[in-house]
Length: 330
Image (cartoon, rainbow, N blue to C red; front, side, top):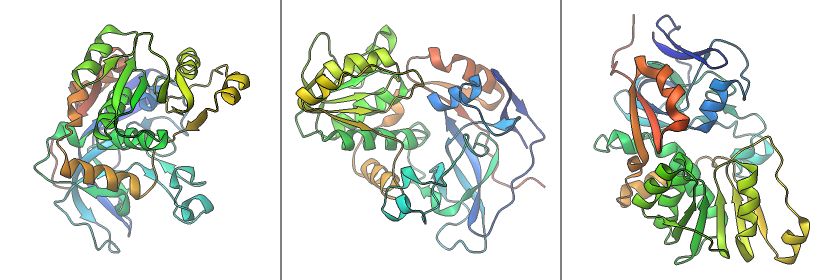
C-alpha cells in the first residue's frame, strides 16, 4: 500500500510497502480520496514538531469512502463517503466529560501523536468519521476539518452580526476564518503582507484593514509573535482577541494594555467533539459557503514531496488527491 511518509526532517517520500491497516471492533477502514495540507503538517515535515518515530505517515485533513466496518460498528457502512475528525478524544477524562474534548488528556491526533491519514487506506475510530453527501464537491469536502477550526474561532470571539472582525494572516486558515466570519454575519478585514494571499482574501469577501484599529473581535491566525503584538493594539476597548496561530517564540503582551482596555484573550485549539463537526456539516448542508474556494493547488499522490515543499509559498490551500481504491488490497 502506498503512503506519504516523513523519512527525516525535510525529507518526504511516497512508499509503496506501507502495511495494510487492520480494522478494530469500533473502527472503519477508509479508502482515502484526498488530504489537505496545513501548518501543523508542515511543522511535522520540517522537524519543528517532533513525532514519535520515523518513518512517519503524514497528514490529517482527510476524506474518503468506508470500505469495511468493525463488528461493534452499527451506524457506519461500507460505501459511505466520510470526512475524518482526526483528533480522537478519549471521551472519559474530566475535560471530555465536561464537553471540552479539545483539552482531552489522552487525545490521539492523527499525523501528530499517531500515524497520519496520507495513505491509500487507513483505520479510523468509527465515531470520528462523519458522513457527507456524495454530491458535495471534493474541494469543499477536503476543507471541512479546517473550516471547523475556523468556525470555532469565530464563535470564541463573541462576534455579533454586523460587527467588523480583524483576521490577522490570510494563509489557508485565515481565509477560512474570513468565510466563517461572513457566515456569522460579521464583516472580515485582513492584515496580510503577502500580496497574493491578501488578494485571495479579498476574493472571498474580506477587506484590507489598512491602519484601521478598534475591532471588537480580532482573530490571529499567522502564529507570528510580531503579528500577535500588532493584533493586541487593534482590539477595541472591551473586545476579544482569539489566538489560533501557534509559535514557540514568545510575544510581548503588556498587562497594562490588557487591564486598562479590559480585553479578553482566548486561545482556540481545534474543536470539541461532537459539536464542532456536527455544526460545520449542518452549516454546509444549509448554506452555499463553498469553502473549497480557498484551494489553489492540487497534487497527485506521487507529487506529495513537491506538495509539502511548495505549500508554504502557495497563496491559498494545497491538497493531495489519491487514486480511488474501493477494494481492500489482498
